[in-house]
Length: 201
Ligand SMILES: [Fe+2]
Image (cartoon, rainbow, N blue to C red; front, side, top):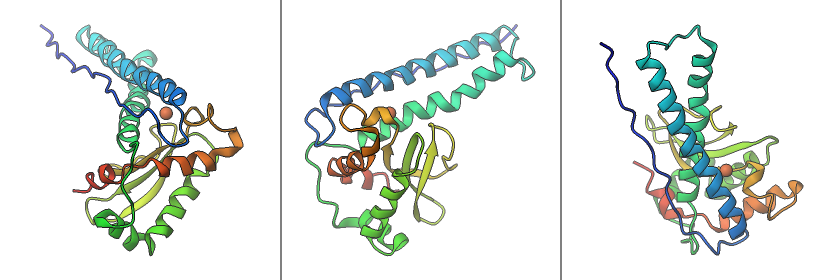
């Protein structure tokens, strides 16, 4: 008799971010819809894989099974990174010029402004993906990283502290394709510094 293991399903979160600076409500509405698609696809993939396992059809040599497994990284990260992103934006942000996170970033980059300049430089890279200031929990150091798509470049065991979406859908309703720098400025104008700081252990 096969043992059927039910897979937990995820529910899409909701945010009230209407009225951000430089990021329109229309962009947010579209973006929330895309995020909900990732949540839906995580649940569908898990359900399908569970069915295959319980039917005794889970085999790495089966291209259909293998492709479903491969997609998990894309969909899971697409879901979770959007949650980090929307969670680290707020309508009336606190000042960023002090506090523990400010100091840790300064230690890693020789000053907060240097960290911010580097984070923005990573955001200017060509391609679609994410910029993430990740904390290495083994030594407390924070470093900036580029993530291609949703799943290529994430660091095992590191904690995302500041998460910025730089897929074109994040700004194309508000800015021209060549104006990504303006979107990045807008992202910082809405950055919820307290939320980022709370991610430090
Ligand atoms: Fe996105």
